[in-house]
Image (cartoon, rainbow, N blue to C red; front, side, top):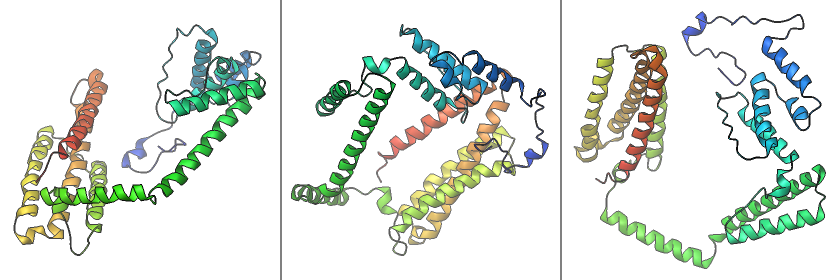
Length: 326
C-alpha cells in the first residue's frame, strides 16, 4: 500500500482482497473516530493537553500523546514511554506534539535545548542562552523567539561551513597535502592489486563499474519481484540452489585471471546479472518460506531471526570484502 493506504496493483492476490466492514453511526463516524471525538471533548479545557489533542488524527495517536503528556507533566522523570507502530501511523507527529507539551510545561526554562561538550559550540550555545534569557521574556512568545534565534544561528553556521568547504581546497596547504595523498595512492596501487582494479573495460572505461553496479541492483529487484509470478515452495531445492551459487566464485576468478575471452565485458556482466538475479529470488523465497515452515505461534519470531541473520550476513560480507585482496 502507498502512504494513503491505497492498494497498489502489484500482485494478482489483490483480486481476493475485500474491504473490512466499518460500523458507522448516523453521523458517519466509526467507533474509533467517535472515541477520538469524545477524548478531544473531555480534554478540551485542560492545558496543554487540550490544544494538542485537537491536532491528533487517530484514536491511537491521541492516546499516545496523552500518555506522553502524563509522563511529562508528572515531572518526576521516573517514567519511560516507548511508542511502537508500523510506518505511517503518526509516531513522529505524536512525538512532536509531546515536545510542544514539554515546552509548554516549562522544561525549556530549566535546561538548554542544545548542549555540546565541545569547547567552541558549547560556548556559543551558552552565550545564546544568556542572550535569550536576558532579552526575551520567559513566556510562550519569548520561548518561540528564542527557538527562532537558535535555528537562525544554526542555518548561518551551516551556510558558512558550506562556503568554507568549497573554498578550502584552493588553499596552498590543502593542495600540498592533496599531492601527498595522490602520491601515496599511486604507490599503494603499484604494490597491491584489488578486484576493482582488475575489472576494467577499455571501451566503457570508468562507466564499466557504474553499469555493473546498476545492473546488479536492477536484476536483484527483478529477482525479488519474480516471487509474485512463481514461488518455489520446496525448501530443499531452494537451499540446494543457494549452495550451487558458490560456483559463481570460481567463475569470477576465471573472469579475472582466465583466458582473454573471459575477461571481456560480456561474461562479467552476464555473471553479475545472474548473481544478482538468483540472490534476489532465493532471498525472497527463503524469507517467505521460513515463517510457513514453523508453527503459527513461532512464525513472527522466525521472520525476525531470518532478517537478523540477513543483516549480519550483509555486514560480515562487507567487512570481509575489505580483506579480499587478489
